[in-house]
Image (tube, rainbow, N blue to C red; front, top):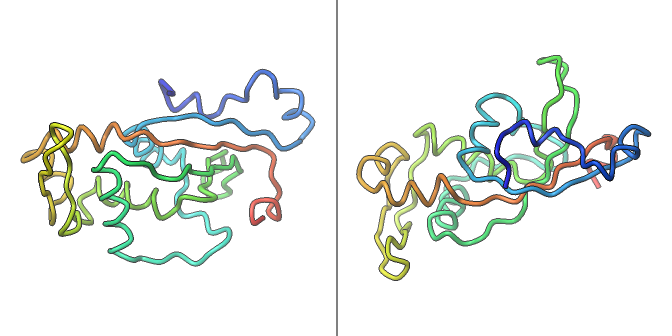
Length: 170
């Protein structure tokens, strides 16, 4: 589990020579959703990188992602690639796979979307507490235990360096 966003940019010691030679390097880390959100807000993580498929603004899909998170189940890992952002004039982590999941977290925490009608969490690990039709702020006030689950939901990040545009699409 990372302690800070700065750790995302650290190339593993055993791969530094490969990195310096311009070869593909990767590492796998975990973070919680509130840390990932911070990375998106601070523009360390670019959620709008279009690399291999058309974005679908599908509310049901987003609500399904929220359902998984509130059940404290598992999401697939997020693939992030360090690249130079010409607009920001700095290196950013471009989301190569996991854009819908990333934008769902960002939009939900900004109160732009609500949980689906069948969304629930289990405050005691057994009993279902339904929280459908709620924004992040509403849940923070009405169901702080649910937000605790959401904010601390563990995400797996595969971070890569030195990929060409072609490699990113493979």
